[in-house]
Length: 410
Ligand SMILES: *Cc1c(COP(=O)(O)O)cnc(C)c1O
Image (cartoon, rainbow, N blue to C red):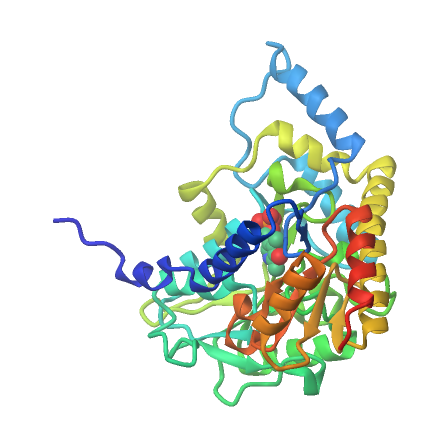
């Protein structure tokens, strides 16, 4: 008899996903000729930057030549990419990150969900609600979440309150978590943390010996010079924070898969049984050699090309395109009189439903504007009452969506 990981059964059903699908199917049956504008997506639509395409072609040719062929990539990633990251993402911001602290991966989701491998099952995990569900669900699979209550919250997870009263900034929890996930610019609310606020979290983590898992996937969308791009811009963060980065959203790599994780050598973890502490960096390095391979040479060459002058310009163009979409959506929402957050320094807009029900607004956008949105419940129980709109869409469609949105009679 095969026993399964019974925790898994708790996340197998995607009830919100089924509810969305049901509504969309009805709409399509009733309106077979209407094409929906999809503003629900966390996936990009723009093609790869030319620098990445050129790098892919060049690297592929090298792979087909006996003298330049490469086999398996080094477990941590190729040093040419790690060097480029250390230089452009950190040293240029006066942040000291050593090359042995950077791990190249197949996209940040892999490591965000995999990091639990080196952490004790007994750690209490803290998340902001609403939240990117991978943080919660990977801990359900990893047996850290407890039971799912009627409220939609897990009994062992500590939910950091974050509502519109605080501009969706989290409040310090009453019960101390061992690990806290932070994501800024935030998915789904589009909110950003200023330096003083982020500093208060780093200080709190240092004081309470908490590990911060900082998801900086949307860092490239920051335009405001006062918003930190990396948690390591805050003094002391090297002792308590792991940072996840990705090329997915900024460079359109969702179909290529490449990102990286920073684990500073200063972070120590403790064990009840062992006498001494261990560096998380050392544990992670070993975990990588056991469980995964770094992405292929071809993909890493494409990622490295993003750090050339040309590559950085092409990424800026990409980001600007999406941020123009966000700005068009912001103006439309303002005109229609909605309360909303985000859309600045972030490709997401978090819109409050005037009736208090996410589904009311979801249905209205679907049936009146032919816009597909993400109901807040997709991001946890406290997402109720909001929908997320995404700027990852074709500009002409966004303009059409905006004109319909701005005419909505509230
Ligand atoms: C898209 C997304 C990721 C995943 O990025 P990949 O590098 O494509 O795995 C991680 N975190 C958040 C919040 C995201 O929205």
